[in-house]
Amino acid sequence: MVAAVAPAPAIADGRFVHGSAGVGDPFFPRAGNGGYDVSHYRLALRYTPAGNRLRATAAIKAVATEGLSRFDLDLRGLRVSSVSVDADPADFRRRGQELLVTPRRPLPGGEPFKVRVRYRGSPRPVIDPDGSKDGWIPTNDGAFVADEPQGAPTWFPCDDHPTDKATYEFRVTVPAGVVAVANGKLKYRIRGRRHTTFVWREGSPMATYLATATIGRFEVSRSRADGSPSYVAVAPARTAAAAPVLAKLPAILRLWGRKFGDYPFAATGAIVDHAPSVGYALETQTRPLFDTVPDQATLAHELAHQWFGDDVTPRRWRDIWLNEGFATWAEWYWAQHTGGRSTGAVFDALYAVGRGDTAFWNPPPADPGKPENLFDGTIYERGGMALEALRQKVGAKVFFRILRDWVSMHRYGNASTRQFIDLAELDSGMDLRGFLRAWLYRPIQRGKPPLP
Ligand code: TRP
Ligand code: ZN
Image 1: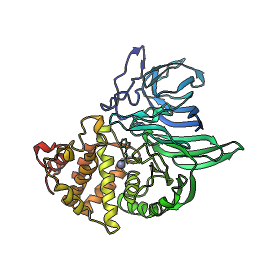
Image 2: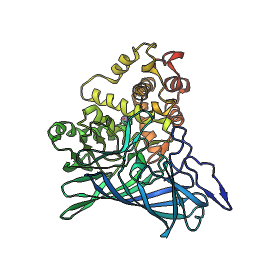
Image 3: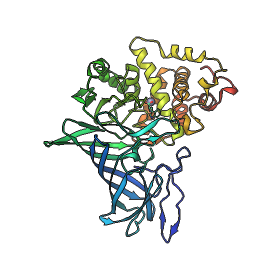
Image 4: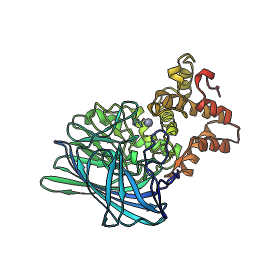
């Protein structure tokens, strides 16, 4: 909804400019686009798993943040058949991951506009700098759709940066017997003889990387979990194994609600798919997505992300420890809460790792250095340790106040590491700069980060 980074306008054309091809995130320079803010995506998708065929229309509501004679959307692969802006046909061109749109009439700065894109093809995942894949990942019976950090444009045209949050409607048509699960609430289903259309709505602002429309022959159960409507979809033959873990979902949500503040969204649930080639789970907004049956730690982790990552989202990709460090610390806290090791004991065991083990300690969590390291182990473990060190330094009471204030200050928005350090100092009344900087930014060659 809000662009946090103001990119330099590209080629000027009188009062109108070409919106830039990226928002200036150094890890993914072409991610996102300049010149407008999206407020809503309405995605109508028709997917045929046999042959991996997608046919779709995206209707996007946005506001121009400057006068635009041209703007970009991010779109990877697929064939575009038409683009219109405010109901007039528009010219379009492809250039790498960009779809360049030239409206018939330039768009005045400050004015809302609507783009409609019709497209089709065989969606394919993108290979990330670390070699993993994300985006639309076909499975035996549908598709596993996980977009972090850059997969959303493999299935819809978008402003693909975490700073441009928007609301969503998904209308997904699949063959009868197949289920399509997206974010938010299931509004209704239209059941034909040969097809079913699932209409989902996510009414809270959501980053593109948290959108999903995962498809398969799922078994579905609907209930309420800690006050929210819950929609759980599980791959066939996985239901028995998944049931005991998924039974913990309400208790985990209740604990996070107590510790982090009220659950931020209008629905919850989970998707347990069978997608062995993926190798990770994702905190898709309202409804975490698992490539296999998760353990309790992983479920607790993805649910903690609903506060840390989904509600409060990093401003830049290099701030990713604000997601992964927090969710990892939350895993440890859930283990302690259920009678396992204490967070302090986990910290002590990890702190004993020698400084010669540079792969364990580097890169420092708030300075991953390059996009290959976004999901490096240190972002998770040393990031979690930094929070545990903070908890011990300021005491549990102040620590949880910091976490709750973090969430309420940045609700549905974006935030940076610097803002977290500032808040920790404000809430504790302590000078924490040197301590947190050492934990978050200092390479191990300059010594282990300080004990609290
Ligand atoms: N955010 C996910 C989690 O930890 C992990 C993840 C998402 C990931 N995309 C990835 C890990 C790509 C490696 C590569 O919950
Ligand atoms: Zn995570």
